[in-house]
Length: 368
Image (tube, rainbow, N blue to C red; front, side, top):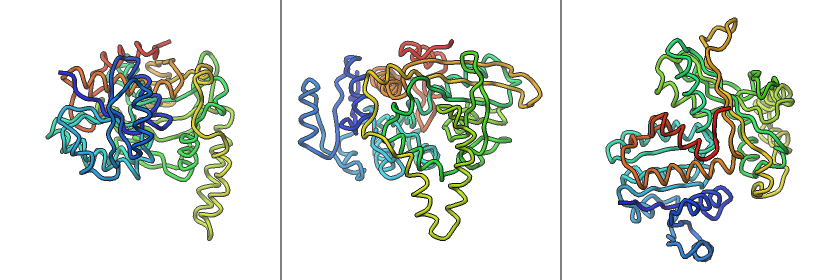
């Protein structure tokens, strides 16, 4: 029996991409949110879909509508503010859960709060199931599989080509701004450590050219060590602006030093405000087509003097397009098939590496 798919946040930019991807798959999700007029119009415009008026901040409100085995998708952020009640409702109901967060701190807290309950009720909970951070987990798992158990370290780099600055959504700009003052988690010497964002710069080879990327957070540091217990180190880097990686490292140092000064909050706001400059919403379909994604994973022995044991490169659709397609793929699979691993889990644990690789390839995310 096919389960219901409920999409919370369908009227937003990312939610609209997920909805379009679900409709192309032939799914008929129920759209949910607080505004009855907007929801009714969207449901009618999308072919007469069912819709639910619910408040994401109230778990009881959602729980009344959820059945065991339903698939609840949420794209409503910031997730540290709005995500926990939604996740709680899914875990308690035994409904599967998928979100689009890029907030690694939220994912860590989600695991601590709801993993045991989700396993008890049979809920598969998939946080950050988009460009952040499924491609990095897939690339790293393939690299480790290729290199074997002698692997001790994995470095992952996210890159994009084309007019990337014009192709960044308002939500991403806000996340980037906030990220300048938040630490980035690394898996280092078999434990999670927090370091200043952009405090490290790493160079990767992307299509024959050396490109720099700076340290960021990623759920790879949470899920890969569970999948591969022999890993000592996992580090994630962003290379969207290779030429700015080192200047951004200095900028991050300045911003973080400012937070410790009197009136530091006001000064930090002033320093980071330029990161918010740009149009509302996100890039349209034409612009997204011009900005494909490229992800690199390097598996190594952990010794800097030695060459990587294996290197995997993935290329695929634009980050926003890919996020919509990945969430729709996962929702469709959870709704129509059994066998996924319950709990707050990463994509390879949930579906298995081969199924994830094949699913991503069908979406255009392939090795090159």
